Image (cartoon, rainbow, N blue to C red; front, side):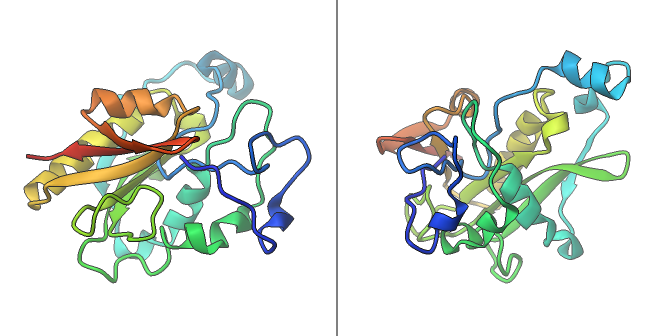
Length: 212
């Protein structure tokens, strides 16, 4: 997770009511906004409870679907309670653009998705990002993760993480990294998967998981 500093060119994204040191909060790909109660979603949609974790399918993201990563990066933006949504063009900022632009061109680009009833509802991907928020070293790929808001808190993110860790382990990587806002409860999930904090900023944890 990351609290992005607002430059002159970035100030247009600032909105009244957004909390945080710089007025703009971001979570590193891979964390969720404040969770909406599952029962509230059921009432609103007038649908019975359904455990999508067991009916969704985890698969490799196809090349023709790589363009969806920009959408999922937006879903990965962490907003604290009471914060207003950011405009979608925020993902075009250079600090975020590196997570999706030209994905698939490099050999270390890897992506998985969660699919349910023909719809992609979550994605996890990694790249070598020397300028990424969660950069550890030049041999360590950085993870990004997002699940669509309506499908969170059902174990889908955990399945995506577990499958990606296995994929990277089988490919011979020694470790994988990520960054997560300290205010984002997702850091507890990463700790359960064995991620450890290697450094901190005032707002975020940079975490690494050994794959040995």
